[in-house]
Image (cartoon, rainbow, N blue to C red; front, side, top):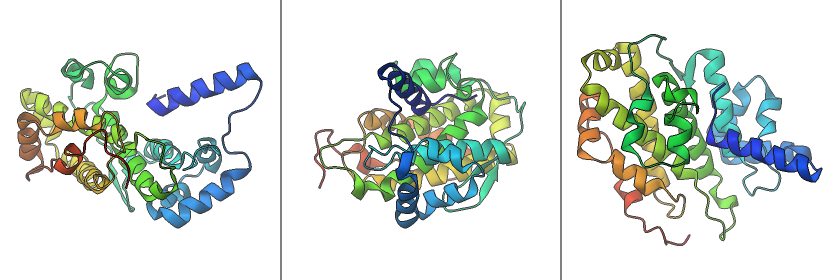
Length: 270
């Protein structure tokens, strides 16, 4: 089973709750209200709720004590389930793009881990013993897609968060975009891997997922205090090498979200 940062944190929450003898403030009697909020504020997020057959799984991630009901997380995790069930990546706004087949001669993403300083995202998604994304590029794309849906939902629900709380919704997508970008750069130096990336099915998946990730990231730049590690990861993404490799793969110039890079970490919410 794939592990994510949120899965690890949720597991820790359950352990703590067991120690104190009380269940976590998830789902409960606020789940219906949370889904109504999602329906009203985030059509894209609500479409994920509608698509997933196991509604109880979605509701498991709802947190009644969170201002946004942890709905970005619920959408994120449900996207993983939809991908596994349909063998395709569900896209923001509807539709899906096929997941590349197994055995496409792509090297393990763990190879690029040394290009990043140690941290939770690197340990979870690029280190052995973490998520499947460390060993299979298809699952790195799965995480890229889930974090795109995650951030898209968070943007739609931004008015719900309290001004004194600084969430890190942009960090996840920033990290995964940088991981994919540096993977593409490394693959260009490996003829077998580069040929595998340029296969029509694999290239189509990367192109669709990358395009929606760019659009979502750029849309998030209007909110200054939406991340703590985002600028570090985006600086990697915007490097000359990754940008050039992405351009040769996509057949177009990739977008560097400069507006997000320009936001000071100390900026306050408008």
